[in-house]
Image (cartoon, rainbow, N blue to C red; front, top):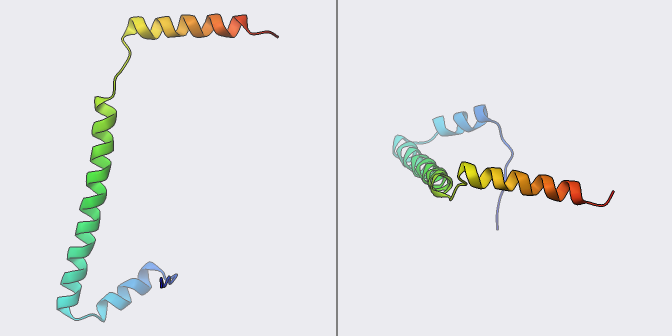
Amino acid sequence: MELKVNIGYRQVLELVDQLPERDIQKLIRKIQCKFESHEKKRTSIQELILQAPTWTDEEYNDFLENRTHINQSKLK
């Protein structure tokens, strides 16, 4: 069973303020782990993009020429 509650930021802070110090520390660690996991995913996507194959200037110019040829040869 999943319980979803729609509460605002201030309400969350008020709830956190009511927690014992030990539970607040657990919450901090949990949030940090989630944030680090999210950052790792973002980094891996960035690395994938940076390592992706790219066209040389010559290949790109060939593509543009071919694309122009295809566009001009379409029946109108």
